[in-house]
Length: 365
Image (cartoon, rainbow, N blue to C red):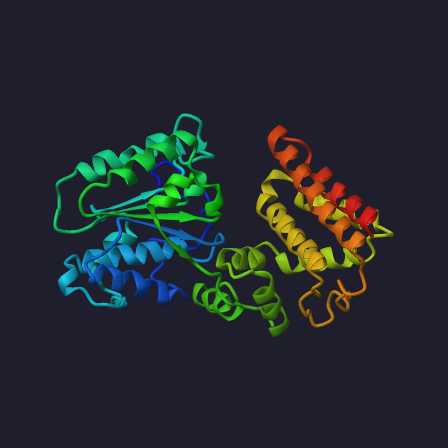
C-alpha cells in the first residue's frame, strides 16, 4: 500500500516497477512455492520461515504470492500439495496487491512524517504492529501472515520484539522473514525459523523478468548478454543496469581499470564528477557494486564477461598473477569499502571515494 504522503510503496521503490505485492509474475522460485504449499497441505506448517538470498531476486514477491495461496486455501486438508497460480481476476490476489487483505501485515522501513524521509531501519514501533494485527479476531479460520522485509533492517529493539513474537507465536500465524544476509540476524531469530535459501535467478530468468516489465526494449544481443552476466541473478540490479546506464558504467570501469598502472586521471575525474552527486545515488551505488564484482573476479582468477569487443578484449587474470598480486586486489576493495563507509557516515565527498578507488587500483597494478 502506498504511503499517503509520498505516494510511494517503500523506501527502495523503483518508479514504474510494481511493488512485490502487486507483481503477480514471479520468475523462478517455483520449487520453493511448491515446497511451502506442500508443507501447508501436510498440516505441519511451521509458524516461521527464514527466506534468505541476495537482494532483488524476488523474495518479497515470493512471500506475497505464498500469502495469497494460504488465504485461498486456508484449510490444510483441502489445500493443494503444490502451488496453484491464480487467475488474473482472482479476488484474493487483488486484495494482496492493493495492500488491503486484513490477514496480511507487510513490515518494512516506515516513512517518518516528522522528518519527511524514509527511516533507515525497520523500527520497533513497526514490529509492535504485530500485537494489534494478531489480536484481531477477524477471519480466524484463515492464516494470518506477517512478512518482515527485510529482517536485515531491524534495529536491536525491533529484533528483540520480533524474537518475542516468534518464541510465543499466536495461533494460526505464519511469519515469512526475509533476509539478504541471515548471518547478521540474531542467532535466536534464526533458530526459531525454518530456513530456505532462495537462489539467485539465472541470467535467462533475469532477462525474462526484464522483458515482462518492459525494461529491455532497445537492447541488442550484446547488451542483453552483458546484463544477464552482470545482474548477478537480481532483477532489481538488472533494472538499475538498464536505467542507470550501467552497461556504460561497466565498460568505463573496464577501460580505466585495464590501464590502472597509468591512470587516465582526466577521464577518472569526469566519471567521478558524473556519478558522485547525491541525486545520482543509484548510479553511484551501482558503480560500487560493479567494482566489487570486478575486483572479486580478479581475486578468483576469472575473466570479464564477453562484451562484443566494446570494452576491449577481457584481460586474462588469475593464472598469470601471483598470490601477492591477488592479495593486493583484495586490499583494493577493503580500502574502497572503508572509504565508502566513512563517506556515508560523515557525509564526505563521494567523488573522493572514486578517486581513492583508482589510486588503490594503481597501487595494486
